[in-house]
Each structure stands twice: as C-alpha cells, then as structure tokens.
Image 1 (spheres, rainbow, N blue to C red):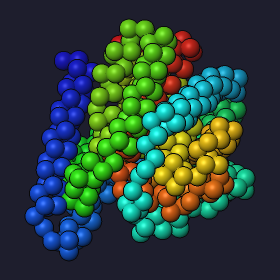
Image 2: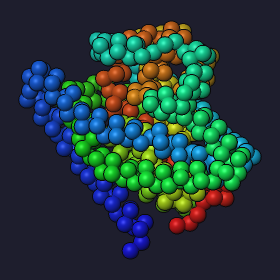
Image 3: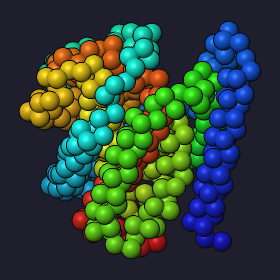
Length: 422
C-alpha cells in the first residue's frame, strides 16, 4: 500500500472527526446556552474551553523545536549564502505583495460595504477590551526591533516568538554551513530531530477533534447563536472580502502551479479544517510542514519558507486589520479616518510593519489593531465592539493564512525548480 494513500486516508478521517466535533460542540454549546442559568454558563464555558487550551498548548510545545530544526537543516541543505538570499528574496517578494493586496482589498471592501455605519454601540465588550488594552503598548521602533532580534534564544523558544527564532536559526544555519564537514554531524542530528518532532505532530493532531469541540462549545454557550444575527452584516462583509482574496490567491496559484493546484488544495483540506475550527493558524504549522513535503516541495524550501511565512505572510490577518479598524472608525463616526483616503493608506502601510511577527500571539490581529489604531485616533474601547465575534472572524482568517502560506511555499519551490511530482 502506498504510504501517501494511507496518509491521505487518515487525514480525511481526521477532517471528518473534526467536522463532527464542531457540530457536536455547537449543539452542546447551544443547549447549555438556552437551558442554563448565567452562573452555570460562566463556570461551564471556561472548563470546556480547557479542551481547546490543552490542544493548542500541545501544538505550541512543538513549534519552537520544529522551527529551529527545520530552518537550520533547510539553510544547511540550501548550501550557501547565495541560495539562502535567493530563496529568501523570492519568498519576501511574494509575502510583501500578498500582504499589500490583502490590506488594500480589505480597505476597498470595507469602504464599499460600510459594516460599521449605524452599529449599536451598546454591544461593546468592556471587560474584554480592557484585558486586551493591558497587552498593548503603543507601536514604536524600539518595540518592533525587540520583537525581531532575540536577546536570548531560550527566551524566544519559551515565549514562542517565531520571528526571533527565525533570526537565530538563520544565523545558526549559515554558520553551520560555513564550517563545512565539522557541522555535518549536527546537521544530521537536527534532521533526525525533525522526524521525531513530526511523529509527535501526528500524535498531537489526533487530539484536534477534542480541542475543536471545546472551542466551539465554549463560544456558543456564552454567546448563543443570536450573536451571529447581531453581527451578520459585519461577518458577511468580512467573509465576502476573504472570498475575493481566495479567488485572487487561487488565480495566482493556478498561474504558477497549473493543474497541480488541485492536488495542493486536496492536501490542505485537513490543515485548513483544523485552522478554521481552532481559529489558530499556528495550530497547523507542524501539519503544514508535513503536507507541503508530501505535495512535492523539497524539504529545504519548506523548512525555510514556511517559518518565514508565519512571520511575514498572514494574508487573512492582514485583511482583518484594515477591516476591524475601519469598522470601529465607522461605528464611532471618526471622519478623519473614514473620509480621508490619505489617512487610510498611511494606516495600511503602518499595519504592514506592525503586523510582522504576530503569529504566536492569540488574538494578535486585535492587539495590532489596538496599537496602531491609537495613532490614528481610533478609540481603543472600540475593540470591544468586534471582540464578541472575533472568534468567528478568526476562523476565516486563520484558514486564509494557511492557504496563503501553502501557495507561497509551493510557488517558491516551483521557481526554484524544486517541486517534485508525487
């Protein structure tokens, strides 16, 4: 039996279990929401959410060693600084273009659909907004630099700062290549370590349905299905934006990959379902490494491009940032933003910078919206407006992040002539 068929069979089974878990979670949450006292709901939601927390923490546990091992091996296999620069350059061209397109598309659509006009401001989630404000510092160059360059690699691993890890791993990988034969033992050891970690990934991913059930049940128990009605127009406009972005991404993907795009999309069903249901693109990073290699991308390209993508190429999150900030500006009728294209373009460019390296932070897009919005007079408590349904938007944006990173990795592999047919 072909190992690939076996793998895709188990992936399809996992996807099915996740969908079942999602439906059961929504059902359980709804039953609790309509039949229970507020006190019971208050104690039920955090407890059932623990299932999702366990799953996400197990995934986060794997990410730092996986990024380090794969990236170093990837650079060592690329062989020299010139190749690293060439592959990195191609990846960054894709990332920056995709980010700009996502931000601009969000801006255009939110100006057309105007989901924030006439919103009832009594829906503000004050508590949640305060909690997020605690996490935000004004965006400054100092903070940005600290976010990129690690003070200690152990600290970066401990806090899952992907961007800092990438910086350390690039230095380590280049140094490893430079010392030639002496470094070979370390490279082989790290290569073996990658296989061990990918095996762990398989074990952890089997717990995904339990995590999904917990995440769904908790959110619906507290909010009920009514919350979707209240914000239907906002969620609808955002998903319309995502649909347009998907069409664009898939069109470009088709231009680069041709018929192979179909095969890639089949490989992505399982990671996308997990990303959608856990509302975390980070949750599927380890799974993505596996799927992209199965698709035929050379491991050296995958292990170099994917971690970079998780820091620089979060298309769904980018679109959401312009969407959420403009929604708040429309709701509070801040004409200096809503009526001024210049301000909006400035905001777009600031987002391009502030959003780098946010993959490891839950609700990171909202933290960035808070930090950046302040510069343009967008009231921080406005974030409470979108908090209630952030999970539902996060599901779509996480799924889009996965698609964007998969396409980027496949495209760079193709341009490098490193895409095999399986």
